[in-house]
Image 1 (cartoon, rainbow, N blue to C red):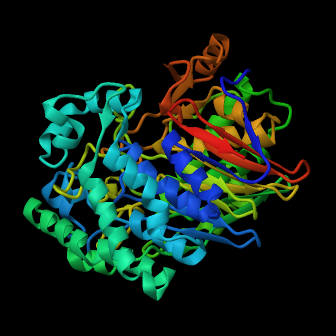
Image 2 (tube, rainbow, N blue to C red; image 1 turned 45 degrees about the vertical axis):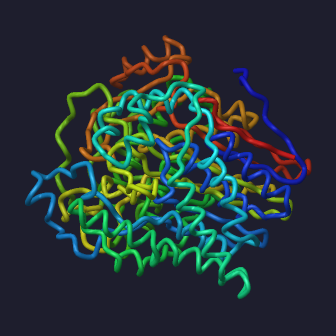
Length: 566
């Protein structure tokens, strides 16, 4: 397979991000002497501007950092349900559904997550890393194809919200590709945080960052958010905002073939990536040709097993006892493997092995799940060996923009189950189970490889395939990213209304027809994707190569993602 772009190589530092302007923002920070954390925060904030349909400045931002000295830290960047929301609200008043709008709002986490990362590991001010995002919001950037298509498909949703329509439907019409997209209110919101930081600058960098944080969570921005919520019937309050700080959660780390794979904890779906990888290894990965029917079948069945355990067990560890050590143990992996056939696809999601679980949703009647347009990704590695990996998220069409602020308080409650008995069920102060999950590999030769993708439930599947393309099949980074992919939907969607498609397997059309036919003959319900689709994920990656003294970077052309290396 030939990639449409080259792998980019450098000797000092590299970035990759879901939009080229975000990558440029991060690279400029590195060139100015900032470290990978500074650059990552600059990219993450910029993605909230340049991908306004996929990422929200007031959304979620899970972060994974590995310092040059080998220490690893995860910043959850995920808000909790308002303290006053009744746990049974959606079961009692909404027929077991989570409606669009303010009722799905959790505490906005992204501003806190970026500032926490800068406080703990950065070298720059909030103003220095947010400068590019403010400029992109104030001066505008060109509408690209996916943004134009998303606005067209969700025109009625944007028109429904008075704060959203002037931004996404300026002048009452859909913007066209190449038009300038301006977010003046968002620019003013970010500038207010910078101005408040500047007032405290004489007390030092940390005092300035604290002032920027207070501007959002206790100042004028918080007051506007709380007033909007009160008007619209939401539950989020000033008290919820004022008391919020992102949790520093333990990373999940497992060895595989001399490499150390690192993800965030079971408050997101990250550990399912590790479980699927370990299942595939124990099932017998060696000898299977890349994207052969045998390989894609086995990979799919291992993904189903890992996603079953995600469904049955993952949730906020502060509220749910997640048996992660048992789920990743040899005993449990072997039990899962006994349910996998090399000849036939499991007709649905495998059943539980540990304990009992709530009933699954009914099978959906659509071809594929409803797609919530959200999430992007960014990563950076600097000249000192620090590595940054983050997956900012929260789309813009299922809840309204706060008038005058240009932001949507995080609607991530759509990933909690309405039934509070479910492991990721609604509860006051509880966090939803998050699909965004940044990851990293410390390679056996001492290199580091931050990587990730948007894509909802497709995320760990795309990440697994690209990681194996590099570390097992020996592809260059860009070739590994561009190779055709598959995705299983044989488990409940993480997004309301939690569609379930037993046996469904989507396959990019570059996978040969004979392979697709063989998968169908094995019992997979094959649905053809186009040759390349952003529904298959958009993986970005940087990998250091110590033996050659180089960094390799790549970005997925399935979206306007780009990498830069120097």
